[in-house]
Amino acid sequence: MRRSFGIFACPNAYFEHQRIWAGILEDPNVTPPKYMWKLNVDLEEAPNTPEHITFKNSILTKYFSPERAFLSASLTSSQKSVNRKVKLKLYKVILVINDRKSDTEKLYNMEESSMNVQVGFILVGSEEFIKIQSIRLKK
Image (tube, rainbow, N blue to C red; front, side):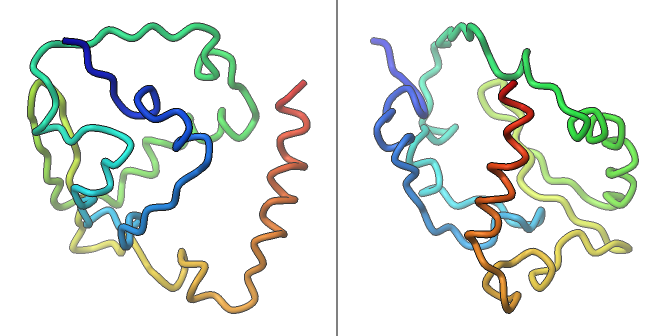
């Protein structure tokens, strides 16, 4: 029996951009709840037989921008503040990071990252910024 996962099982739901409320997912010390796997299969319910998927013309092999080069170069530096505790889950040969916590560094601040807390945030402005930035990437 062949089972599909994620967007392969629900392409219409994926492209319609369903929103699922799951609380604060930006906080690295919060493990996503089970119902977040709505468009995917929870690891504990995944089949034991592997499914092979081949990607052709993937954006991962084509994507380049100065921002991407900067991010790749800065990953080592960005991990210096994660200095205390990382909870991992190894299940069916898949490693999942459940949460990250640091006693000396503040990894998450809701006031800095929430659009609900910040006053005067206009979503339309973000959409226009993304459109402008994507022009050069489409070339």
